[in-house]
Image (cartoon, rainbow, N blue to C red; front, side, top):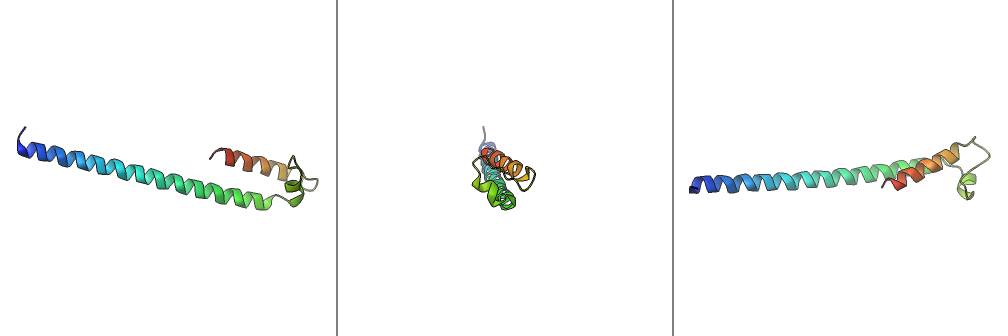
Length: 82
């Protein structure tokens, strides 16, 4: 292999390595963004659950026709997806 070909190969390998690192970095920040968004959604859902449901062991309240219980289940589902 001539010197020009060897240099071109090293350059190509370096570019591929840089692209791989950039892709991993993008994936890392994308996942971080998803986690932050999930946490934001969980907080907003929890804000909709009434205090009676939060105090009940099963998460039920007599005031909102099961809405609070369903929201509690949704929060649990989102937390398990982490």
